[in-house]
Amino acid sequence: MRGQAERAARRQAEEQLVALFAADGMTLDRDAISAEAPPAGRTLERDTVLDRRAAAFLLGDPVEVEDQGGGIYAYSSPAGSALFRSNGSFDAELGGGSALDADSISTFCRKFAYGEPVFQVDGDGSGTASAIQYSGGLPVFNCAVTFTLQAGRLTRVSGTLLPETGTAAVTDREPLSAAAALTAFQKMRRESGAVVSAVTEVYACYELQSSTAVSMSLAPAWCVVTDTAKYYVNCITGAVSIG
Image 1 (cartoon, one colour):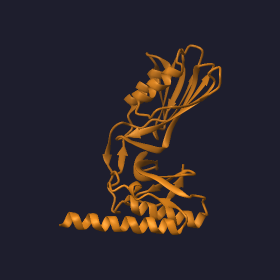
Image 2: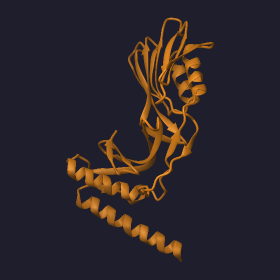
Image 3: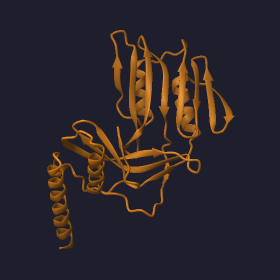
Image 4: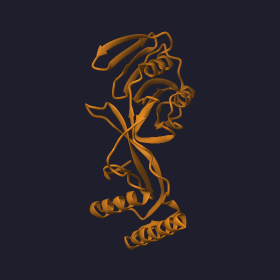
């Protein structure tokens, strides 16, 4: 009986939210409102072994490593050089000694927990590709990697590489549900005048945060997919950003 009452209350809240969006000139499918709980936040620890694996993939093995201080490690080989930082960001420059090509990009993404890369290249294979980092099976919307190609050869890689392990973050705030995130999104849209006519999907994700106290942490968030753009609602602060 308690479960039935909870489901009935949720349906009523969803119907009210759909009506509020309609009154604002926006279409919201009730089925798009996720009933799942948002993910727990995570605190990540620097993994220099993971950094070295990524450097070896890009530069070839063996690589020389130098601790430059301040959480920065430099890697080098005849194929190029790379810098990995304590906040997860990295840059790699590949020279003529590198044999990596467009196929290598997909392999790198699979090995290091990125999503499927999106390519924007011209007829001779020059351009870029990009991919979103995943953590715990969820996308981290502000954490990505970009690959630069020249005539089909990989020449530069820049982005963020997150450690694979972490601990649950402790917070004294109740994280926002998908319905509460939609309410925050609607408030932002009213205040900003953003042009949106339909919300088509809502799914859980993470937001990467860094500070002097914690170099890498993941805050739970909801992605609100609309007909014009993707918006991200931080489950802890309620802040809304556009993708």
